[in-house]
Picture 1 (tube, helix red, strand yellow):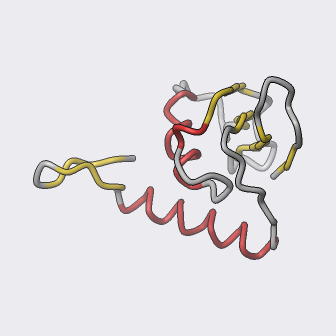
Picture 2 (cartoon, helix red, strand yellow; picture 1 turned 135 degrees about the vertical axis):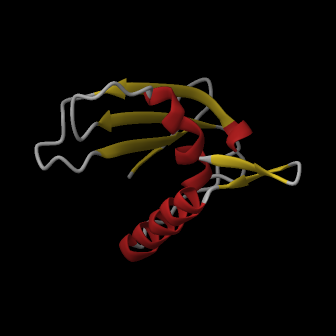
Picture 3 (cartoon, one colour; picture 1 turned 90 degrees about the vertical axis):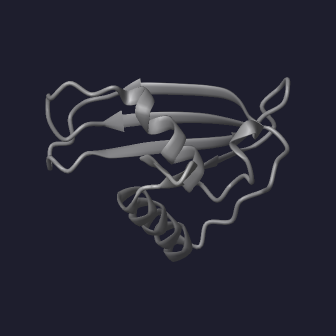
Length: 110
């Protein structure tokens, strides 16, 4: 999702479109996020078909698109799981964001 241009890494056009769409979805849903210092992420991937995919490649763009924290270095706990195929064949992901501490204090589900 990133491209090197003149020695700088920038988001590709496809990644910028994805990020804008995520921002629209969060805005439309009027989801309110606390701004925790540390966060835990659970990402569940529902692929559109049975083609081989490296689901770890989704992590960075998902982190960058989420408005619930300012910097992805705040992520202390990360779980990624491949789930069943999307029956509508579009593919989608489910993301659960939680404030993180030694005991998980609060949870916001998206």
